[in-house]
Image (cartoon, rainbow, N blue to C red; front, side, top):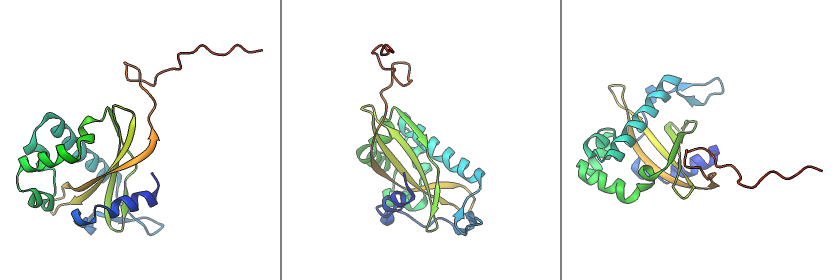
Length: 171
């Protein structure tokens, strides 16, 4: 996903997103904001733990990874999980997911997660992260962006399926 696409998708979440803490950011030699590798690792851990809680149906644990603004918006773990199940089912239905390179865009920390659906459709979940005063990262928003990419079919073993036709004879 290009930087422009990330910015466009991010604009869709502006109403639901709080600004990330500026003290979590560093400046690259090019003058762009960035984060140290340890911060990206912590961000991915938070998202992964929330996804595991969602898949397990553990509303309270999933809700604990949401930022204060998201928790205030939904009020209870039950209302939060109801919203996730109704609007973000692709997160738990994905047969495969992988983190893409994160970015800091206009001071906001965005962590993309590629999702491969059971029908091989591809979505990118764009997580907006917020660093709390205690140093923990929490999820301040997520938007699912469609992709025109189609995933390769997988065999039952979970690897890319080989073409079943025999190779053409060489002349």
